[in-house]
Amino acid sequence: MYFASDNWAGAHPEIARSLSEAADGFARAYGASDLDRKVEHTFSEIFERDVAVFFVGTGTAANSLALASYNRPGGQVFCHAEAHVNVDECNAPEFFATGAKLVPVAGRDGRMAPDALASAIARFPPDFVHGGQPMAVTLTQATEAGTVYTLDEIAAIGRIAHEAKLPLHMDGARFANALVTLGTTPADMTWKRGVDILSFGGTKNGCWCAEALVLFHPGRAREMHYLRKRSAQLFSKSRFVAAQFDAYFRDGLWLDLARHSNAMAARLAGGFAAAKSARLAWPTGSNEVFAILKNATLQALRDEGAVFYDWAAPAGIRETMGRDETMIRLVTSFATTEDEVDRFLSICTR
Image: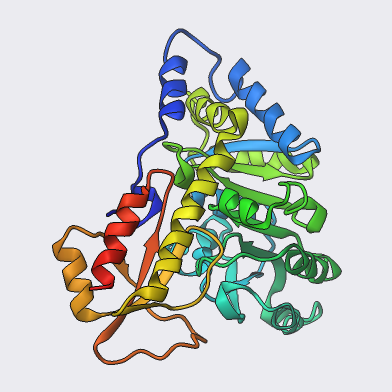
């Protein structure tokens, strides 16, 4: 019963097979192989426009380089207060942008509120040099709270960003999970709603180590080449990242994997309705579920091999917890089975 993180899951067999096939023979290095070019073309097909694609090794690298590419002196980057870039990346975005600052923005359920974003940007008037200058807006899709921005919400944030002449970045570590929840297209969830640059994640959804920066304005690609190299993210054998994405996209595998992990999360969430000593903390729309459990039940789960993390209650939570209760986070993956979910829930209903 592994629910600690989708990062704990291995690689899907089709992706592992593609990696093995790429290991044979010789290919141009540093992103110049035929396979690299093929996958870059696939990205353009998926997003319905010409895009520039840069493979990197981690989501933190993707987010940091995305924001660094829009760096300004005294730069201020606006994000949700509990966004991954703000609480889980050891200040890497500020480091790679050589001194930029993240500005937390309020919003319920892990999503920035458009009004709060507009107010935060207005705190930095362009003629007040002491406060620094707005640099970018970044949102996480799906969010760290397991929720998903609607298309209209993305568009509203995009309008506010562009009215302030700021680029909009999307942290898409769980991009596929959000996409299948909304039942939309990659184009409709990104550039058609104002997104300028995307951190596209594959690692959490069945890949071994595959992340990509997707630039919807390829004219900005020249600077990114140098940023990626300087940050030690230009892999000599990048064909092994391309091989993962090649299998990931083939026959819609990436969407099938996301649908499965979302379905397992929904099964978990639904089961808490019948649980005697557990309840859902809030509804989510991806593969993360947050629940409040009796401490005795937590121990019983761990005694039987369940793996998950206790979780700090986020600001604005509507549920109150008793002294004998703890909030936990449960994350499903492409490898989660119905049996795992049902065993977990059976312990909660004792």
